[in-house]
Amino acid sequence: MTPAARSDESGTPQRPSWPLRLLRALRRLNADQLDLWERWVRAQRPWEQGEWLHWVRGEDGALRLEGDVAPPDPGRDTYP
Image (tube, rainbow, N blue to C red; front, side, top):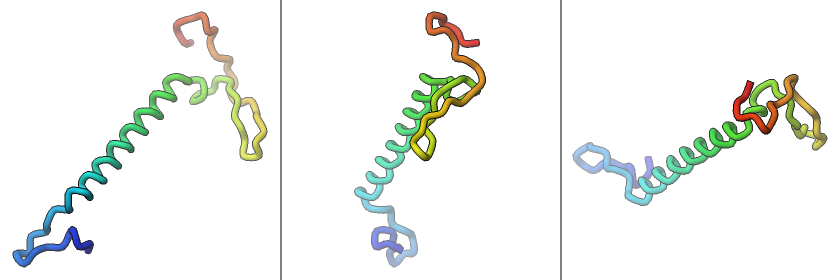
């Protein structure tokens, strides 16, 4: 048990100190922001998640083409 989480003589556990609560809240906020950012990035480049043609850099650093379907015409507003 950490010193901040020790219980007093009455047996009830004390709340963690405010710096620990702040740190946990900031970590949660960072994780939520990262999740939202990753979702936004995926929404901007949907062809990388499906079978559309896209370039991928392999572990050896070489680029290779993946997918089977060409992306839609950039002049069109809708995806197939």
